[in-house]
Image (cartoon, rainbow, N blue to C red; front, side, top):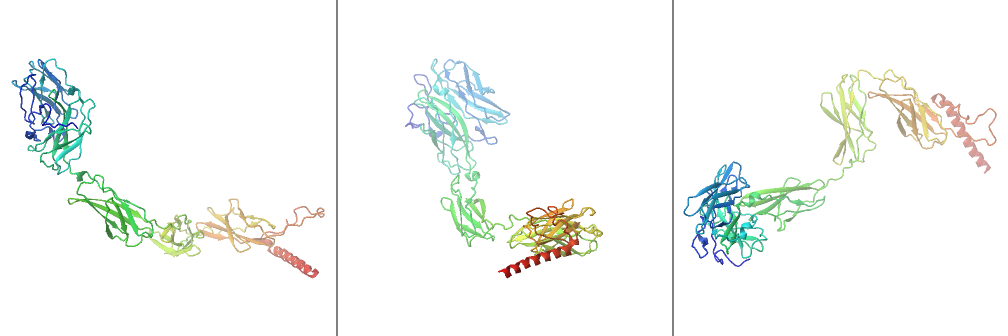
Length: 606
């Protein structure tokens, strides 16, 4: 930074008229010079100043094009780019010995005055004003008149960037900030900042040079302490000590704001927790944009609702020792409280220990079946298939009665449930939902409904006895058919097969009455039984059973067929239905005797 101060310049500068004291004296070149007296700077009050507190608008300082002796026109510009709508700007010019004149600022910011020939002994004073939506009286500035034919000062072409300031908080005693240094700033020229108060007419400030290397500045407030709500006006000036030119840049309003008003407490972040953990840890940002004097405290709300305080480390980390180990599904809520001068802000976050995986996660309760209900019936019954339920699962059936009330009954180990009811009324409806419960987890079935009927839809219907096709050893299918042509409308049929080992299988009877069961390879002598069940509106009716016995495959003849015997004809006349039960049993007995006789013969030969 250049080693000079405003009080020790190579050549004294002229300064803001009305803001600093001016000492005017002619010199040989007839250029007016001024001496800065920094201790007599006076601020402007907000009611007559260049700042409008309602809109936040700042009235800028006029910039005048170079003035020379003999000029008969004064031209310049005023930055009105952010002037509020409905506002008119004017510039008032004062020249010693002449009456002040006022010019309206045009839409492009330009203004002009026609004057008598200028003289070097009469500097030109300018001040901007506004009327209309905003009425302001700006900061005045005085421009020198140079000798005729003199070159333009390069500062008049200099583009000054808008300065920025650091946050100005209550209690501050200086204004700090920075700006971009123009690359075309002439040598031996410099930039400085001048501040005034827009809200305190008694405040006085000193100017401050801008560091040309870093672009930073510090404006001392001369004993003034910033208070919330104060507004200060800060203007950049370029100064040329060789030509005594002072050229203004942008004037900005600097607001004193309580940093607490712009502070938002950060959310804490929590590390995952698992069942069995005895420590809860996390982190909180207690550094970024935190107002001075702010303190932090923390507490954790435990699953039972009680709270435990904890300390936050200097780096924002925290480790909380839990009164007892976390359990599956436990939730912990951490709350951070920021306190500043009696004011508080809070932020919270929660973490939950993962719950045990539900044993019912992949289980769907089958739809329940409600048996048919007849008018006057006093018990409702039904069932649900619980054969594939996970171990340890319990079931209940919740019945919605015709009056809208509900009752819940247990489902037994075979999947049956029943509920005593008032005598059923034709047309009333009962609805059932089955709930599976396992280790506190539950899933429910779809609902099933049944309407009370006046009569049994299968009362006058006899389910036909099925007919089974013959079977020989090695067969893997049991097939047959049943006559369903005379069944009442909406009747469905199920075929139930009893295997030789006593186990059963069920299949749906096809629309043509046929049915097929897949079985392990049949053995000679095995017996298979099939019963047909008709279902209609929850009512069921069964047929008489049909039975077939597996016969051994016929022995092949190596030299041809016997006279009168056709291939594949061996068992075709053997009865396969219940009408031939006795014959089948006789044949089975003969086969057993033959096998037994063979064994005895072998033993005797042995």
